[in-house]
Length: 320
Length: 299
Ligand SMILES: [Zn+2]
Ligand SMILES: [Zn+2]
Image (cartoon, rainbow over all chains, first blue to last red; front, side, top):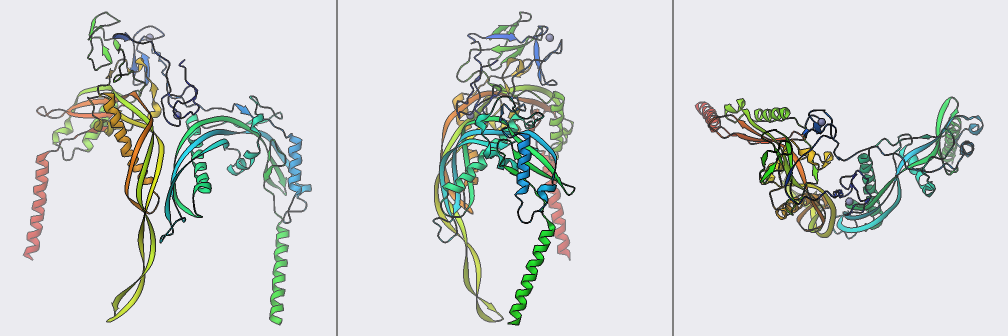
């Protein structure tokens, strides 16, 4: 096996052992030193299997032996689907998740049916780990934009700048089971420092697998970095109050990605023959996301009362 | 250079510019190893051939037929005289490009303008909205990685020709292994590294011109100038698969040289123009114009 530096020499991003080039800056990874040649010689490449001379076959797209048909492996850019290596443990038990649901339904709100907490029936409660990437990176960003600061006759004046910032412990969801808005609300509440190499949680907890190849994952992560850089520049770097035409060129360094499995409960409850979905955080039972039915009766009554009030006010004004 | 075949011991005569040889007696495919030098380091990467020789011929002939309208009719019967799969050495360049730019940025605004015009014989004053541009200077910096610049390292295949069959799909990159070129023609780099480095930088400059134009804010810009510094440059040799065809259509004319990208199948070749066909077409056009003119005149 070739010895590969774990880090890119140019941008210090972490490399996988199979990488031929850095995924961020495209620097070729060093290869294992080959025996030095001190004088010219002609060499036959021999088949590992039968010893006959081997040649590259365009049909096989690999070096192939014409006698025994065995193919020779060459190093290429691997693109596997990586799986979670860090499991954040469950700290909320199924019973607590159930309790969290009851508390969530009880908190009602005026337009909720008053019998919601008592009549809602739990349909299913599934503990699961959803997949997410966590990354660190340093971004050197150069940018231009038009803002209202320093504008003369036109509403806009051009500005340019450079800034660098550090992105630390950023979570990007790879889940298909949870929605983007759900994962965005769950993410900040995980204590990833507690992650373990093996899953720890209630029996029957499912692990949702990553289904993106390594190159696809890197594309999604780079896109996330770019959009975070844009947001950050728009929020903190631009002078003035309004902007347009924000253009950002980003040079990343030190990108380090880990694959996480993050705990959550997906619950479904039934109320008046309809199913509603709720997600409870696997580490914090006070974080409950989901849908609640509304009481149409209450809404209609409120609307009628409001209408009646309006009519009375109107008649009063007319009468005076 | 004289070397011996490991299979039968016969003398191999290998040109200095080639990396591979096949034994004239036993046909065994040898790969030549030489002490590396600055202009001729061992290849780092290679892209394997994907297009079969038959497919390459087909693609080249289809391409020729599609573009044969103005060509001598003999090209329709062109036959493949020679077909060679060559691993062409190229330099794969990457760097962090940091540019200081200055430009004049145009910001549009609308203004209400009064003007006079004549309406029904009377002079009236009216107003209208006009868009004007305010020009503001801007200076700044632009930095990004430039990943995949390819320039030829072969004096046999000029860069302009290589560009015609680019792009190559670098996701198929493999770490160079002698077995990848065994049985094929593989060239050694024949252009000095310094010259290729300059070529690569020039190519990046051209690319940056577009990148910077797109980087400018405002509604328009002019006077964009920039100077670029290249940091952490990397330059490695990558072997690229190219089919080179000689198509013979006229025994008296030289054969047509066609290139087919051995990975993607993209074709490049010059199709000759038949001056007889062009002259006839021009004459025909003149005749039609003349006839029309006479017709119109006689009315
Ligand atoms: Zn890198
Ligand atoms: Zn064999």
